[in-house]
Image 1 (cartoon, rainbow, N blue to C red):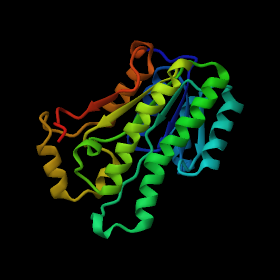
Image 2 (image 1 turned 135 degrees about the vertical axis):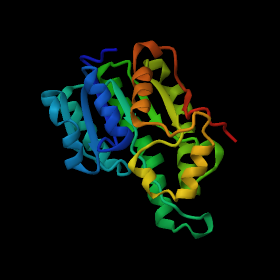
Image 3 (image 1 turned 180 degrees about the vertical axis):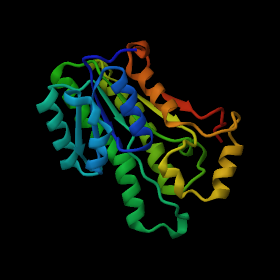
Image 4 (image 1 turned 90 degrees about the vertical axis):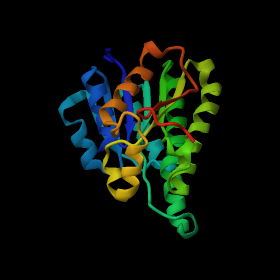
Length: 244
């Protein structure tokens, strides 16, 4: 599957799913924009791509930062064809003990960040006439409720966002879908208590966690012409976990 001539914008590109997604599209010939709050790590992610790579420092929860990032993409490439919102954070907080700033921070990155990047990405797609693809990343926690309240709420919001804007953007030829991973072997999982981790793995019929590269391959499919009639969908990649 080739993405030669396409420009792919990836948030959370420095590590985990985002880094795997960058590598997948780079190998498929795309020009890749690695956007991350960690500018040095983003630059490392696309260092081997030469003119096909662009690293940007971007705080996805800040409207000005997101607008500046897409302005830089427009100035460098004049287009964007695929936007993938993989930036995400979590915090282990019991509901009654959740600090206000933790709630705002998780919602800000996971939900507001997805909204801002979808909006600016779609604006650039329409400007350049691209029939593009936007891919958001949610979580099985959005459906099961197993996890901190701010994380579950933010990821459920991403799924609703996808359904809404998929309808609105369809006349422009822009498709919007969500990948809904189960537990995935990323650095963010390092903060999960071991008893939670073991319980999650036990609930996966395939008996293991997902690997970031498996998410990247699904993103590649959803961004491709092979998925040309798929929009507004939430695609579960969870090893057979049942939604509760």
